[in-house]
Amino acid sequence: MSEYQHYEFQAIDRPLTSAEQNAVASLSSRVDPHPRKAIFTYSYSDFPANEVDIVAKYYDAMLYLANWGTKQLIFRFPSDLIDMDSVGQFYVDGCLTFHEYDGYVVINIFYDSEEPTGWIDEVNILDSLIPLREDILRGDYRSLYLAWLATTKYERRNGEIEEEPYVPAGLKNLSPALEAFLNVFEIGRVELKIAQNESPDVVEMSDQAIQKVIGALTQEEMVNWLIRLAQGEELNLGLKFRRFVETK
Image (cartoon, rainbow, N blue to C red; front, side):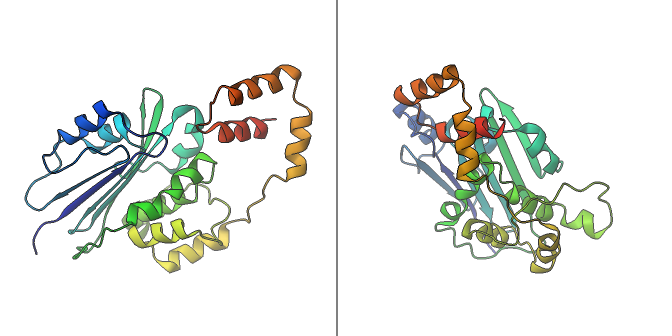
């Protein structure tokens, strides 16, 4: 079986500048500059840089697939929107790790399958997983728990796990993105069912509760949020406000 590796990077929050596109394009003569995406494929060589560093500098997501069974999914987040104590509960040495860079947190999920993947149909796989990034930003850590299940498979079989993370709510109702994650990272339905039995239902903050908190905002707080909106701070402003509301 011949070797095949596929790397796909995507920029979500903002497009790359021309200088950034050229910097990425310099990694390979076969990659054309693009403001949102870069794809590298290899049959007899390797990616010439550290993929975590490339995501930290330029992109918000990366998917790596190799036909011998290795899979890797990386997401980058603004550091002020990630609760490191919460996500850190899912840490798995060498497999599910968290890297802090200047203004960003990068989550790296690395998984080696027991069996070779064989033929890889990489079309739209990363696209199907992108919604998981938004989930994590909203404090929905179901994907991280599933990643923990995948990356501790062998240790759990051998009884080597001393402490498990909490089971997040909502595993009984999986989104298409979570279903795609199950397939990519080969999580069995039996172990998923066990986790689903322990997973509580999601309790959403009602519109009435949000309105109550908004009504209790001080004049200074309200003016501050409106100024940020008026000045065009659109990137993740809704998430920041929701996080602010949830602390009240």
